[in-house]
Length: 122
Image 1 (cartoon, one colour):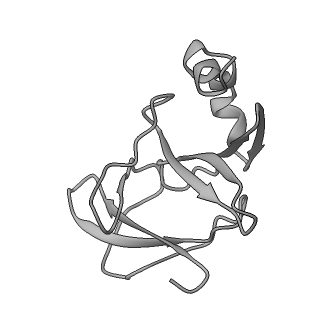
Image 2 (image 1 turned 60 degrees about the horizontal axis):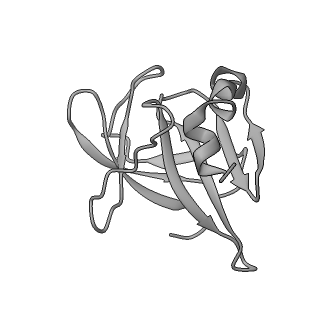
Image 3 (image 1 turned 120 degrees about the vertical axis):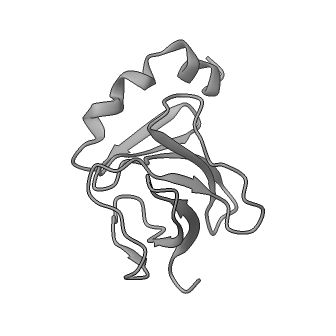
């Protein structure tokens, strides 16, 4: 919608709302309705707003996984933190990882794990 990606999100109180995130990697601006409340540190559940499929990562329970297709039709795997206020995003493409965000060092271990190597076809 506009310049944002729409997610269906559920807070720890099981309340649901829409969260719009900026699509630029490393831009952590977001939009939500003022009545949809969560606080920094809350673990949020993300799902597709159309089919309600949970957007979970096999790498870490605190990361969300989506596929990004850019204007040149190039696909990248995107992982980002589901913890409110935590700025951690990882773009995986062709065996390389770009980590962004002030908290991205928190999850750098996943690049070395067997689970992650499986995703990179190593």
